[in-house]
Image (cartoon, rainbow over all chains, first blue to last red):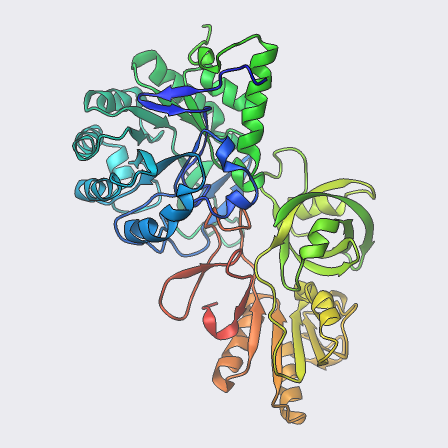
Length: 305
Length: 251
């Protein structure tokens, strides 16, 4: 499998292979690196960072649902300052592409975070989270509003020369419109999709199973939704797409690439098998060999309809 | 921590819904400390999706013991495993009990399945006096195997002391005029809360092992927060716990 070219490009960002670990499912790399070799992956996306530390939502934060899970973590994170001081030195040594995910409650905060972080050489790109369903201010309020997504893209673009990826919400009627405005305002790529809003109640206590009442649904349950959203963007907008949503194995990853994803992110599956990213890289390489595909990037958008 | 494919070597039913299993897991057995846990994948399919956390009950050579009751689909599937079946186990996880130090008596306080981690701890306490206190709603839920010097409390009085295990413990401490001891506890939250209150009031040296729904078990999902008493926010049950100083957290 050594002669197969697994590399892909997300705009100007070159990845050695298309497998990224999704924000919020890999922390800042330190814990999961004890269980998998991060240097073999295309890259990792950090837990969402905000300007100041956020302690996150009270428990219960997660619950398993059919073929999925709901989470309402509330963007618990160490904040930009501690990230630079305590997390960057470790991430520097990982020999993988580092994409820094930013979450904020105002456009100014997004810009401020990116301005501070853009001088860090270790960070190769930014993923802007405009679609967290679990915080009151910011998050979905931005993600569901076209003009807000446009303004955030425009202003973050002005703050950095590094590639910008906007992480889109699936909780909108037409996701392609959002990808269109990201492209128009100078964004390099979109990630699709963030979690779907969901809820789960206990029938005996009649109370929500997670304290936040609603949470973000992830896992295999959302894969068909994500596939449809990626395809919708691919057919309407010429912008690189990072496919996310319920990827559990290399076949799921291949499916996302076929409908138009230039790269993919593995999320919930990391909680169950922390080595799954590498298993997907190997699986894709074997698939290419078997299918006589010399360059994995040929698979991107190769769907037949 | 590591992932090990482990063979089910033995299974015993200890009550209507309570099971003990023994798994051949040499690498994890070698690393395990009392109070740590493992996150077990009970099926090869996506159902149930997530691993299930279980306290390490004991370690003997290359084998690990777990104790569990059937309370959902995951534990039901686990109870139906056959000898020779392979399970995918992630562990050992979390910080265990810290049992070294200058105290003469270890007081073990367990509620129901909260007995699970204590056979392993007991096996490491050979230089200490041990008194164990086990409580449950009724006698059928009392688990005392491999514990030492056990006294039992049942809510309905169906076995030994009628009342709570915390009442039983405090009367023991007072009667025996103990002053150099450390309490190790695990059990349902209301029990731990009652114990915590007494330990904070009387400044007792006490460690509690707590439970929380979790996904990954090693700190990346941030799904299992517990609020700290210092006002600094949350710690994670999986990575910072599951054992905490009683005064350190809000239950």
